[in-house]
Image (cartoon, rainbow, N blue to C red; front, side):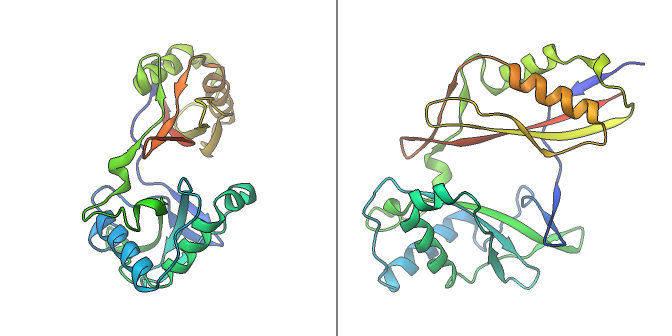
Length: 240
């Protein structure tokens, strides 16, 4: 029986948070905030000015927020368990929580006419949301992903496919996982882990082992010309 490993874009994922089904990201073309990201950052800027919120002393602070958007358009800030990151970016963290109280443009997530709790993610770099703010600002325009220096992400995928031991997977069928890891500010790849597991323990184990053993250098992600930690997500599908 022929076995095939596929690395491709992942379909909509769901997770469970406090007993509720949460869609792990808004589908392409569906905005978590009315008017899209540019409107989100514009409204964020306006709140900073209108409420006379003070800028952070550290101009390199930034913070990535995870927000649950409920079917009634209310939101909830997801607690960050990385206390070191919160402390390092305390000003931005507290500023963001304050500004969120005044943002009202949230779009509930509807998929196939069914309402879900949606997970929205935004990166806040305060230094560009005060005096430096310009109309149409979107932080994605100033963000570069981490880059694998031996052929880019496609080169990394090829190394996974070439190193994968198909015979080590004992369970037949269709298996889909999501492998993630963080590339730090120095371009060092962290230990891979599974954000989504399959029903095949041998496939899960083989994928983590293969990804963890791949050698090569990474360029760190960049945010406003500053090297930052960047999470790499690799959807991995095996079918036979």
